[in-house]
Image 1: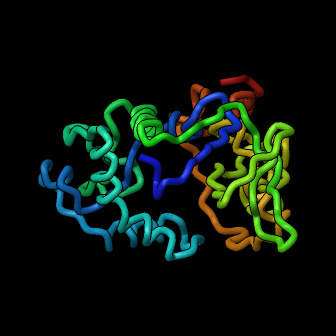
Image 2 (image 1 turned 180 degrees about the horizontal axis):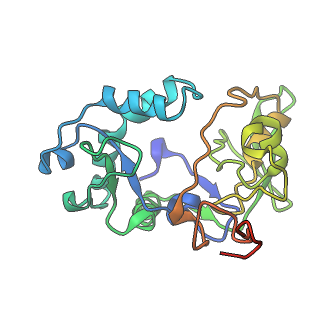
Image 3 (image 1 turned 180 degrees about the vertical axis):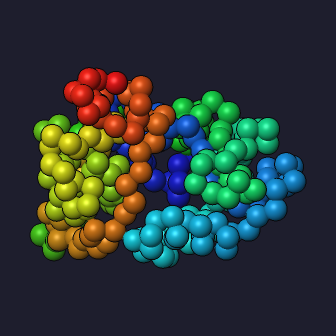
Length: 249
């Protein structure tokens, strides 16, 4: 059943759906869940929020992590409603929280399982998806309202347009402009984990029609091992270590 009777088209620039989420470990950070209680772990949203803010050095807009923390358990329930399973035996400490309070809820089948379930749910409701289709810009009517998109040389009109693109970790120019801490080392030292399609297209096209940008310089750069092809994910693969005698080790 289509939402409110609408016909919905999803344009995906990559060759498959899911972005970084499909490649991830599929871990939902949540507090006070029944999965934790099944492992005799007592936790609450306030403690998770305090942990998140401290770990992020308070360099984030507080309302966003608060929403994330409060939404943890409902998100787990929603995903389980779509067939994703979370085994309490797999509840684990991600490495950044208290050793007594595991909050990492990995999905059985990792991020691929989550995105596969959501894709099936979307298709069952009649959503149309076009992969390898890059949206190049937005169409506006004479009054300035957005009325569609330009994608691969074609124009598609719509009553509403939702920009739900990925981030811009693969666009060094945008990083240096909006998150200079992450791009301060330049091209020779910058490498991004995740898919190459995260180049900030949504940010650019929104700006082109007058959208405001907020939160510049706010964020938390953290490498995630499961998203990298490197043997040692915390250093660039081409970096060579030598000792005081010049010998590689």
